[in-house]
Length: 511
Picture 1 (cartoon, rainbow, N blue to C red):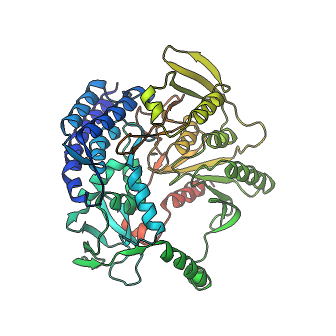
Picture 2: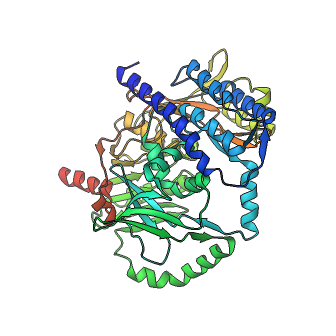
Picture 3: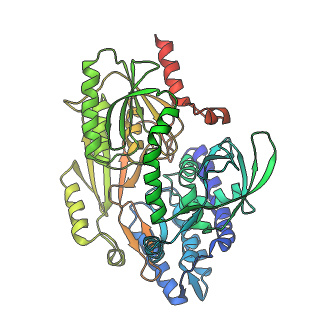
């Protein structure tokens, strides 16, 4: 193992220990929601089931850290049990253990009982008093992104220092326990917290009648502001949709001139032509949803083939958290010039307790396992069912021209699979930041949930190990860009797309 990797693992071990105590201390502030409590025997049973799932169901729990380090963490969790505990307190014991696992598809979620309670209340008209702004992280500072209220107390670009007297960095560090990442990667934590900040904040801190924030405004003046919450309910959501439709015509007139012409649109997929440089087309893929993607790829390649003035294709995987694996393999086959290999494996035996509390029924489990038994070449192993799958370039639907791929820390799972193979055979120029998903693989395919018997805390696992057979890359890290880009505050305020600007710069140098 390289020295650099040893250092990263050592640093992350210290961070995990620090976060373990930080989570427990700050979570005391958050446990204000009305939840039932569970006695010591019930909590012990739940912890026992969670431990079995961790050790005996996950395909490779000790890929990044040795077993004895996890044994110690489980012992600490068991020693921290109290005579009476809420499900939120039990979750806080599990979060640091599962985070250290280094598997982005394996996570701890809130109790199913609590989820049902909140949904039921929402359907009956309950009003949620949500945080009225989203955030943007730039150069280790946090700024206001979108502000949802009609007043102008805060603006986009105001630097956020604290919420309800808790420093913003403490809040973000605490929220990181909700995020899982592949291997030793850290970009996925930052992007996930940024993208899901409001939801994570309320999951941790609950709701408030007022949000007291400290900011530094555009003039450099530090101010303390009391904000009303952004009210959300079933009826308010319906009304806002109606109001939005009425305002469409007015807002459209106020928009800046479009930078792209839309050539194809299906679901959330977009195939766009640049107005700045008409030789450039952009395929925006926010997630791999299955059938829609394959259809739009085929149509896009046909347009490119018929219009000889199109010379450059940009695949935009920024913000793409993954999705359908078969679609990602299909896309890679249409762009790759070489056959690529994926090895998949799972445990042969499913632990009895795990099967008892698993969300996927036996029929679903049987169908998934049966389907995978017909792909690739079987490899004999003692404890695992393993197959080697080879993907040749697609014989019909193909693009072989100049290719650019945009990536960021939220490019995860299936999108990092695409990036990994294209990077490995030097098929494209990569621009952005290290992907959140691993260069060498992940654990996914089928990710059933296990509900603990008493608290009903949900634990999700990637039950299949996927290994991308690639020549290069750093173990435990994502796909690195050829050209790293970073937004500064000015870029953010001016809505500049620095990754696309880099694409245009590179194209202009070639001409």
